[in-house]
Image (cartoon, rainbow, N blue to C red):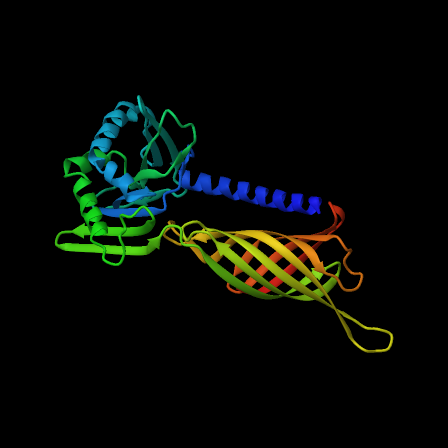
Length: 367
């Protein structure tokens, strides 16, 4: 029993560590210096494809650091002193601006464009090389008392070129539009979105006399729910095709993180042909525990719980009929592909602790 518990804990730990590292690298941006994990976001359209995105856990974090223009002026002054040494006009630049208690740090990473684009203009004989991807400035605050590379509040400024930030400040900056977006948050009627327990996404646009506010997923930040997932399948186990019925109950702790924890029960049915000619069905059931990871929605901010990234499960033989499985059989499985109602799951069966190991594969149809 202790061995099976150990295997379950080991599997969960490995899966969690692997996915955390992938998520960490993705959210940190090209600098990969730390992880940003804000649960609420405000995106302010600044025109000409420029945008300010603020991520935070509580609205009070934003109100404490709402003077973005002063931070941008500080960055422009520092960046102008180093720009000549790092500039590459056709590369995509990610700058991480870390504001500390007693110092500031600018981490710059440049990535070459995967596609070279040329623009031909009437009246000019030579083509012009075109930059096709935007630059990103990420602003975070670091404390001398904490060594963790983890940021729960961050500014992202998406601009065509980092050099455009100075021009943006000269044309009025971003403070006024951010203040208008914050006003829209305070005036939201259905919920008090300034409450620390609330979370939301807001896209705000103010152009001339046109104002657009689009609130997405407003509600409690920690709003858990259950997902019931029935599946019919057929598995290839030791050269025999075995139909199965599976029911998973998945617990999603929060709608703002794409992780779910499941308990499932799977029944396998073996069809035998006894000597007397009468059919015999043998049923073998596994009780399983698992963890699932989901892709984000196209906007990249919230999970899409209908788009599974992968899952890991460990199952224990709960009901045995016949001698196809040994008494202490353990089943390890993972979902490596899902599209619509179809799932492909490689499996590994073993007796006890990695004894008599044999692989399998299962095709499932369901939620």
